[in-house]
Length: 418
Image 1: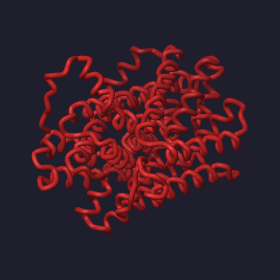
Image 2: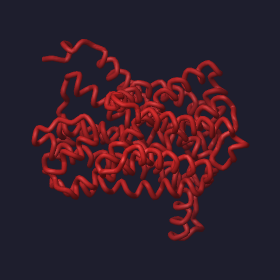
Image 3: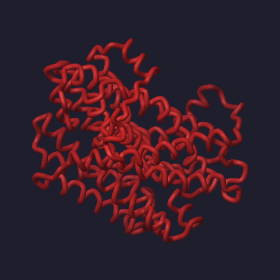
């Protein structure tokens, strides 16, 4: 990828240029710390202590490389990922990819609204009232706004993820143990551990991310001459999302795992933290869950609408009106209504839906990455901006690892026992 120089700009000028371009990378990455992600990280910390935190080191590099590929394809081709898949691989491949993506995203949206419901319970608010208010807010934000206004709201939401970092320090963990577990991982060859590992990767590098980020870069109109600044946006986003996830695991490992407390949801994690870490940690964790759930409940339906409309060749984009892009806004509206209404049904197994949606992301990810690799190494599309050998190696290693872990989950439990 060739670098474009901005030697004529002062340091302040470069900072302003970066701030004007910043958005798609940081927003896409942070949405991954959604209700499903927080639940996955909370359960990982509570059930396995610090034994899984080593995984964030390879994950952060894989995430940055994969998301950078999406952005590079967007800037060079001016097209979204679903659009490129349809043009290069045909309608049939696109159709199956969209079906799988829509089903996974609907499960994810249900998880977000269940996170909003859990937040209502934690703060003593009527969950029906909060869910309806949030659903209306999300709908108005996208349908009545434009890309610039929507992006500003999303960037503000990103700031509040610091609540989890603060709560991590409040619990006063043993940093010597954390450093040791991070740098000297102790793998466990049992199905529960591998299931959680696939879930962590699946929630940190989710298939919807590639579709959303590429579409967002296209709609924002980032040019090739400014791409180096957007690449920084992707790198910052990749590190920030993993730092937040890292601290969620630390909070639950240093309190819940230490005291043998078993949980199944982020709500249970927050409630269990109150007597162990105090009311401030409880409130920080609960507020973080609400912010993350509301944030992701806005992005995931938007990502689905972008992807499907690209794949079908329909008009799309937040900058267009409902009349100009009826399919785009209708799909967005339908997913919000379905996700919000489904959560209000009594006795729905939301915990299973949340955890399995994250694992499904991990299982589906390799297929999306293979299509991306074929696209980005196509010189007819990318010219001189194809992948380097190192990029290809990192992504292929991610593909092979996810396929191997997914196959291990299907094997009998006895194979993993020593």
